[in-house]
Image 1 (tube, rainbow, N blue to C red):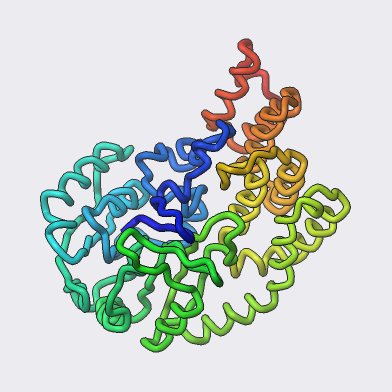
Image 2 (image 1 turned 60 degrees about the vertical axis):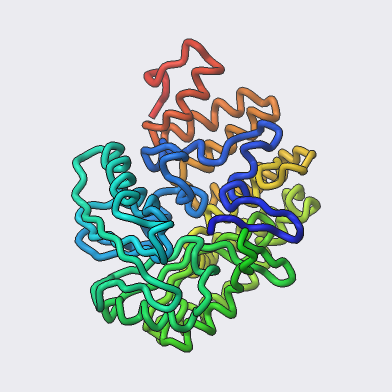
Length: 388
């Protein structure tokens, strides 16, 4: 289920998302997990790959305490275990097509594991059901959200499954897809040779069953990776508004994508024009693409090899320029300051790096990563020396 290939290369989704952990020792994706989520990358499974920042994940999912949430294609339920770290008093249902993938024993094992990781006693409830290729067997009209994480591409009978899930949702319920999607001529396949869905065709299939796209994680691009997250609701007016705004911001997204050109990314004048333009349209951009900060950050880190293990160059200035745009758009983000510190450190500008780490600490004085970095470069460093 969690394995994709691009062209002739077969790699796991986990490797595909976090491939930079083997990239010239530059950095490890997920190194801010403990600062931001309070849990390690291993404990978060794939969630930090979809949303590196906890606030972005919570804002996207909009799960509220007391809601009913199901995951279709959940395997042994580890994703729901992760969500149980972030929410309280939620009724979770794990669903899959056979006891080979999901059983009470497997679910109980994961519930026990994640209950031990929580900072407070477990308050969520967990159940499981076994469905089949055409129906989920979930309780009728009970759910606020039904989530599919790297499973939608596996559906053999897509229309039947959407129709079935529609009956399981409350009137204002949402379908949430977290997937790697094929883009243009770039087809991605799972280990069972199922082709990754296209976003456009997925929207068409959903609309036939009365569900309409209302929220999207980031613009479609294979510059970085193929992952995206989509929310569908039975609210065509809300969807029409979404698509109207998406059309309006298209020129600014196109402008952002020019940062994939080294000539542009290295040109301080061009970068400033892009920064000023994006700042003027920031509100509309983040309304359409909720993870625009993460989108820009990923493009920036691409230039230092993070998303491509064969990328031999270190285009530090390009990366710094793009992170500076991100800092202008999202000044309260400690992550931008942190990554500016990491890049300057890798470049050998230790004094600049230390200043960025200190700036990051002013925005998040609980950042263990920033403290660790500063102590590495100054053994006498103490949090008390910072001027907040």
